[in-house]
Length: 113
Length: 114
Image 1 (spheres, rainbow over the protein chains, first blue to last red):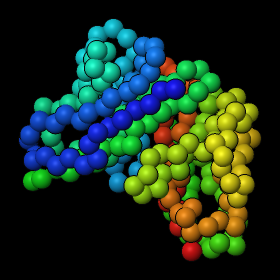
Image 2: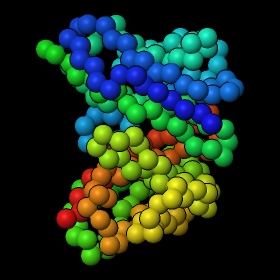
Image 3: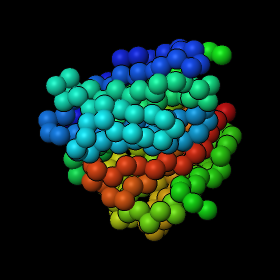
């Protein structure tokens, strides 16, 4: 069965600094991978997704993620963080048909002014 | 309205009340989901509907009762809840249950059980 880990529970960065959020997955075949963001009291919004092809995918709000098969990772990056990026970030792996999405536990991002 | 909507956004109910949460998707999707999100716990999948049929019930207590009258609407009926049921309840939809299709989430209903 597939699984997702996000090693960092909470990360704090200064506004303008670069950001990398880690995601590791376990899945036997080529995974379908997603990053979502959740602002306080809101639902989850899709940032980006990887299906196949170019291993560097671009998303909304200036985010990108890189798929590394050898490391079973799909890390999320942003070159310059804005105060509005403070939120919870979830990595997810798409399941086989008939199975369910698996979400990671989330990483909370705080941004210092 | 666009996307996935949920009503009410906030709900306070006593342990003996009966209430319902409503979810509506305007995306033409065929699968709908209920999730529970509690503080400091991972997202918990509660129910999955595909083409209006319940395909999964993840050992959810019977005090939670889902209903999917058509592909656009999903309800979660609540009765005799416990304080530990206080959480954010999220509805989501996807084009199908195939793994290539991302889920779209509503804003959630913040439930407080007193």
